Structures are given as structure tokens and as C-alpha cells.
View 1 (spheres, helix red, strand yellow):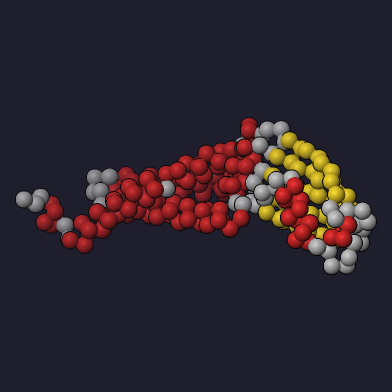
View 2 (spheres, rainbow, N blue to C red; view 1 turned 180 degrees about the vertical axis):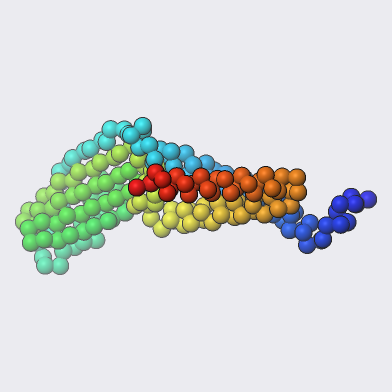
Length: 203
């Protein structure tokens, strides 16, 4: 037997409330891990001085084939792949510059950089590799810096999920008669507080 209140509530409202509740619960659970990640790294990013670790820098020397560097058309692919394979570099190539006397090759990834300078006369090079530590890696993942296309998609999808979770939560408020007004007031207070902080304290 249906509740008298349900008979008075339009069918579309009941279905909307059920759909919003279902979406809110399951979207929250599906996106929990990534939301937790961005929440925690928001703290580490905003207070980098609390978690700053000492960077580890390593310098190595080597030599590439002279025929790769002497011609006018430098063998960019061969040089880049040789450096990557020889020094186990997994990060993406970010820059490759050719001067009259020198070639510079840079790789960048989250919390990681590797820069090589190759002498065009001899093929000798010096490579400097810097690792910033796990917190720097997490912070770069949060910002999407030097993370590649796949991680950029993760950021976009997580932002979309956060938006849906927020909207479905707001929609649910309108179907909770006893808490509708207090919920909307809380939303308004939160928005006003952020606006006031921006107006008064943000330079």
C-alpha cells in the first residue's frame, strides 16, 4: 500500500528524486579514489613547504655516434631513443634543440627532469637527471604538469564526476522538505564565505 504522501507527489518528482539519489550514491563511490586523491594533493600542493623533500640529482656521461650529430640533418630520433634506452628514461621528450656546436635534449615527467647536452664535434654528452620525490610527483599529477594525454583525460573525467556529484546532491536537497531550507542556507553561506574571502584577503 503506497504512502499518502507518495500519492500526492507527482510521479516525475518521485522518479527525479530516485534517479538523483542513485546517481549521487554511485557516482560518489565510483569517483571516491580520484576525489580523495585530488583532496589530499590539494593540501600538499597548497602547503608545499610542509612536505618538501630533498631532490636527488645524478650526472652521467656518455657518447653517441658522431655520424648522428655532425651532419646538418641531426638524427633526432636515434639520439633521443639512445639516451632513453641507455639511461632508462621513461618520461616524455619535452625539448630537442640543435645549435652549431651543441645539441640539448630534455625529458620531463611528474617530479622528474633529465637534460642532456651533446657536443656535436665528438658526440660526447653529459646528462643530468633530477628526481624531486613522491610528493612532487603527486603535486605534478594534481596540476597535470608533464603528465601526458592519458592523465589529462583522468583530470577531465574526475572534474566531470565532481560536477555531477555536486549537482545531484543539490537536486536531492529540493526533495527533502524538512531539510530543504537549512540545506540551501548552508549552500548559500558557503558560497558567500568564499566570495568574502576573495574580496577581502585575496590580493
